[in-house]
Amino acid sequence: MKFIADLHIHSKYSRATAKNLDLENLYLWAQYKGIHIVGTGDFVHPKWFKELEDKLEPAEKGLFKLKDKFALAIDAQIPKSCRGEVRFLLTVEISNIYKRHDKVRKVHNLIFSPSLQAAQKIQTKLGSIGNISSDGRPILGLDSYDLLKITLEADAKNLFIPAHIWTPWFSALGSMGGFDSMTDAFGDLTKHIFAVETGLSSDPPMNWRLRQLDDFILISNSDAHSPSKLGREANIFDTEFSYDGIYRALSDKDDKGLVSTLEFFPEEGKYHYDGHRNCQVRWHPKETIKHKGICSGCGKPVTIGVMARVETLADRDEGSKSKRWRPYQNIVPLPEMIAEAKDMGTASKAVQEAYMNVLNKLGNEFYILLDCPIADIKKAAGDVLAEGINRMRRGKIEIAAGYDGEFGTIKIFDFGEREHIEQQLVLF
Image 1: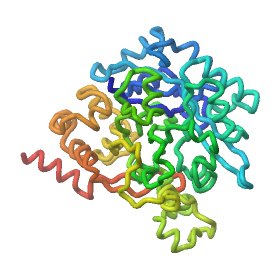
Image 2 (image 1 turned 135 degrees about the horizontal axis):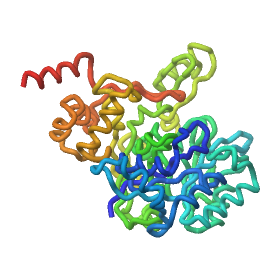
Image 3 (image 1 turned 90 degrees about the vertical axis):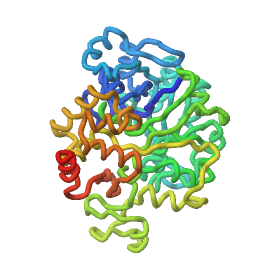
Image 4 (image 1 turned 60 degrees about the horizontal axis):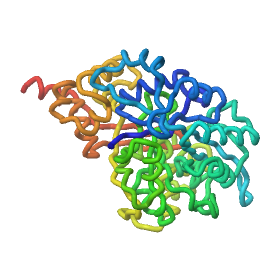
């Protein structure tokens, strides 16, 4: 069975997340987006775990569904064109901050669990180590190696996946708090890691340049902090619709169940280039080298982004592929496409209304971005949006790259182009 999964998200109990980031809104937005399996996020948080127990019930093996008494109230809000089955898979992200080799390490790691019992074992163990109640993504003074060991001991079918492995401050290979290799981070337990997450600021070709990543399959997820951010990145599977199907697709090097990934344009990620947000200094790595890494505004070292970090560790030329490579497609979220077509902000009422209108007419967001005929988009939403999506599919967009925590900004139309396209339509 072919399905789309977004397996790294958070709940309302994580810091800097939306108050409506609950199971009901995840169920709603998954259908808007066209996502079939959503990670629960935050399963070690006691209050969130209680909600998972109260609101979910077992579905396919290792997957859960929202109980009818909660789902029925949401179903009326979902356009008929978008309705579909949604399942949940138990996931959590842990922030590990610890000292190794005389350096403070800050690494985020994902854990997927096949059952509430397996998840609860991890929750109980981590609760004895540190505070798991103040943040849905708990910060623990626990070595990543030890977290991996705990994960494997709780259940052999648990999956441990280093999160957004290039993010400067909090990742296994990040420039500020990471290591130079996965084996440096996870030692003799590295063989129990089957997949790594690329993060928003890198794409598969960047990761394929490292031989040390050849044994890992690459996955991509949204790391959503609000329901509307679901599906910024995602994974397309064609396998058994179950936890076991996903487990095999990631762990078995001969299994082709992970078909492809859906990716941010990496330049849009907020750590692609180097720079200093406070000084509005955005540098390509070559510019950083020219300035010896020192900000021209404040005189302090700039944050070294993903592009430069990959270049530092890469041992292959651009264009190489790893042994477990998969196809991928870069996408821009539909609200951003509509905002660009209308030359408005994504939060504007006009953009939000247009988004719901096009979903009603055509179907879910992924169908519109990936598969819907351009002629149908023109008919439903106009020539400007249709041309924007056409350009996105061909990769014909410009992006001012993200840096030091600032997302990149997309430009699809040059000055006056929107008006020209609309005038052509009127003349026709």
